[in-house]
Amino acid sequence: MSNWNDYLWALVVLYSPEKRTMPVGISTLQGKYVTQYGPLMAGALFVAVPSILIFLLVQRYYIKGIDISGGVKE
Image (cartoon, rainbow, N blue to C red; front, side):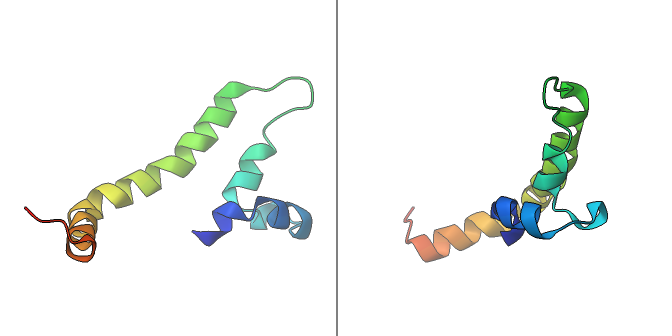
């Protein structure tokens, strides 16, 4: 997940389209004068859905960890 914030580094270093990170890959869908929003939004959805599903699956443990470490009292 740490490569999400490395947009510029990945853009400069990775020449091969197969090795690009998802943010760099999605940015290649934007044109210079025209942006086709259909493929752009499909790519964003393709990237966001796995993260949302993983969070929904581990939400109970995530909240429990925050509760234990944060000192929230009932």
